[in-house]
Image (cartoon, rainbow over all chains, first blue to last red; front, side, top):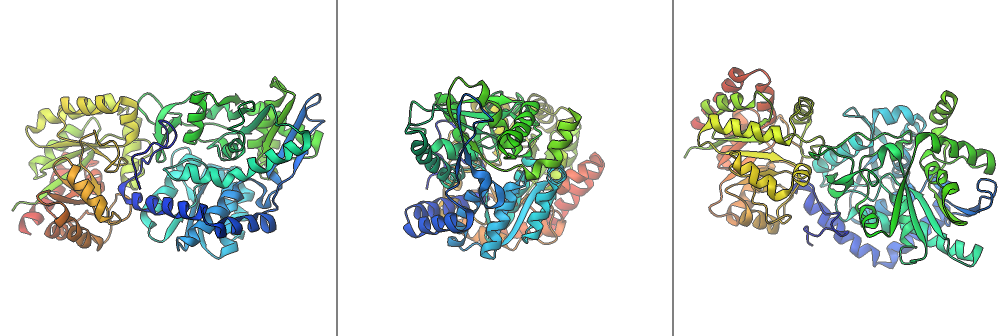
Length: 377
Length: 235
């Protein structure tokens, strides 16, 4: 197993302390074995069907986007309310194959923490979730859910008290407890093999969507859109279309956390990618009303897709996302997660009629924050 | 044989004077931390010290000035900057190595660039209790002068007891690293722990507790380093 390879063009790699390298080698080997093992695939398919509610539906949204053929891939209807469960179950089943009894995770919006706590409850594993104290305040219902599910939520009181610090705290826990613990990273970020592993576990979104879109329209969409924080729902959605040259791939970043739009090449949380940092490489603060996008880094594969021109990434402001959040609720009877609202917000401005958006999660967790912001605006 | 005492300090405006006090009290090598905003290998003391140094403007260029000033006060004592990949990535890997040497660095330590990655960058490698024999061999054969033995699986910071993992790590590393001095660090803060670690290894690295002592000034740091030196010399 080599530790020198940069996984996606010049991006990716393993920028972590030596202590973790053997665990990453072990994880990479277990993953290579699992993805070739029909028993692993069957177990995940069965969980998807009987526990998550897969395949998730595809919904036409006529009133939200008049004059367009807009389809929503409904990851919000998954068990636990977001795409995060696809990755959490896949990694927890993998951790069981590795014989790990203790699971840790980081969370921003709380969706990945809830998904991981859920998977751990299902399999009877100990679960510790690191969460910035600012995010605990913004996403209080998810903190209560994680605790109800039997997880311990560890507040992180460093820096901006959001996802970046929670991720650092989780990595430090992993360095300390690496013998007994598997770290279920929540996005397509981190040292190799995580970005590839998370993409593969999330690629079920794109595989289903591609088939459903072909069935609905008899053709592939002109544009596929997804929000990008770390970028896991987007990479899972894009994965099935990346070889379809005629399908445009559009990622939407929070304007105050546009790691791809305004960032520079740098190293954060174990990988080289495009990040928000100053000229000295010190990590800058991100800002987004959406806790799930409030992160100064992004998966290395997205940086590579940007550089190769295969995907484009555009920004969306808090106000634009809030408008889309309220409008989808009123016009379609679907309350989207604030994260997903960023993807919805750009649809009207796209030069395309036939568009597919990954609706990565539902907005119940965001009601207090969004209603307060809408009221204030 | 004299055991090597390595003292870690975070680069701040006062650090050259502090480093001189440490060397006068018996330190043999100074590790100079260039602060990073997200130091994954570090525990709370060095995290806080890094945050404070950054708030005081200790970015890469000023850290290099601090290195040069420290060099001018220390004569021939080795000084090894210790930092993270993000700083080298931003500054340019080769340029960073060249400028560090030009400012008086003896070598480099990059906490999150393990042996095998960036082989062109000459530096001191770390090995940990989790390292396989194969990785220890790789680190030993490519390290720059000595090998940093991480005594425990965890981040930097004082512990109540010296890690029991050190003995096994030294036993595995010795035959794979013939002629390479082994210095043990992480979790060593008291003279007793330093003595115990030095019975196994060729030297010790003291970080978090030294950073705390340095916060009280050169005299306090000097007294602390002298207590470590005395314990090591008494064996």
